[in-house]
Amino acid sequence: MDEIQIHRKKLLFRAGHRGTKEMDMLLGNFANKHINLFDEVELELFNQLLDADDDLIYKCLLDKATLPDFMNNRVFQLLKDSAIKK
Image 1: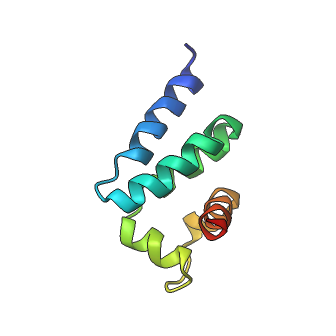
Image 2: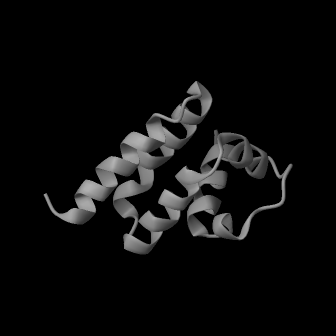
């Protein structure tokens, strides 16, 4: 297994083990669907997103908080699009 595959597996685990069931499901399902499509830059953007507080992510998804610069990217937009479609 190469380094990028190991990094993907770690991110998959983190996405599905957030601490709140709702975010576990939201981020875990998103990661399962998209993680293998992400390049190294997008994996790092997703890693930064996973470092954010669940409440901030939730509020930004609902447009109830100002989107921080580190979340203003394609990965967050994909998450938002997939969350809205459900």
